[in-house]
Amino acid sequence: MGRVSVEGVAKAYGPKRVLQDLSLAVEDGECFTLLGPSGCGKTVLLRLVAGFETPDAGEITIGGRLVSGRGTNVPPEARNLGVVFQDYAVWPHLTVRANTAYPLKFRADDAPQRAAAVQGVLDQVGLGALGERYPSQLSGGQQQRVALARALVAHPEVLLLDEPLSNLDANLREEMRFEIKDLQRQHGATILYVTHDQEVALALSDRIGILDPAGRLRQVGTPREVFDQPADLEVFRFLGVTSFVDLAFDGDQARIAGTPLDLRPEGPRPSSGALVGGFRPMEAELVSEGGVPGTVKRVALLGAVVDFRVEVGGRELRIQQETSEVMRGLGLPVEGQPCGVRFHRLRTFAAAALSGGA
Image 1 (tube, rainbow, N blue to C red):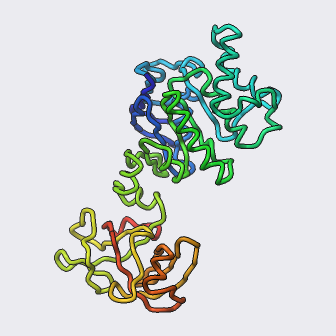
Image 2 (image 1 turned 60 degrees about the vertical axis):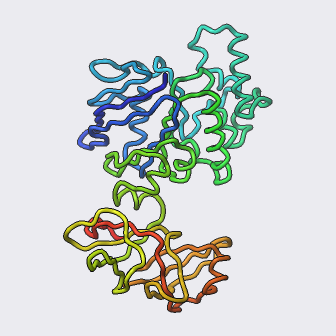
Image 3 (image 1 turned 30 degrees about the vertical axis):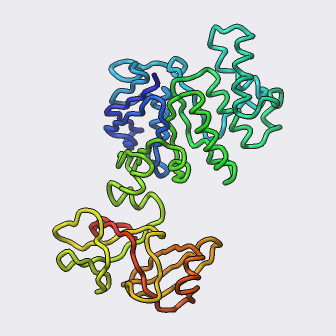
């Protein structure tokens, strides 16, 4: 069983605390992504799970077996893990086949068994005919497949992926994230994936854990839960593009710039202090009549969508609409043109939490 449990883990480097009292569980067979900005400690946690470093406090178990904590520190090679690094880490002097076979050197399999295992996993990652090539003869995507094959060949319980797609171009990233998901289904391995790439995390994961810059776990949930039901302002701002408008309430009636809204903002409403409403670009639209009055500041036709910057109540908002919808409605506006903004969804937050700006 490949369940990974992290309980009360802390790690510091001198006076700098990277992780403090962090707890999470990655269930057997799931793809769990740690998503957070650079420097938040996600790679450090991966290295602690791998056994490359030792936590200052807390416990880590893999498959129900204690591997770190209470005086125990199981070495990496004895944890039954596969690891894929950001820079591939394939050996340039070894062929694709030799790179892939390396983890099997520590097992008692005979030569025919090893050869069959290597060929099988190379076939799975689409490199079956390239076993005798060297890394210098491969593209970046092919080198990444070698790293994946090497990590999978020994059938690990857990696969640790450290930003493995960040060095690939956009098309290859999209292709490889689906291949990783397919490989996981074939092998049944538990995946702990760390990245700052929101698109990869949302597309690949069964669940996502959001880390803030201080290394605190803000929310754990499915991709839909963390995107659609953010636990707090920090998560909402981190996931996707966001805009904010100043809100005022008259009883339950919400107003923006003195204009009543035709919807009730979501979320708890603090009893005191200024409030803002937060939304994502596709959760509002420009209208020719009605809505909250605003002024078009910028128009960018991006093919299938039009990207607007609109000033409302002293704040500049970003709104996106499908091009066909815009053309059927008010038509393509020009900069400086008055417009109305209709909101489909607003989430309520305390304005004081917007330290650092909207």
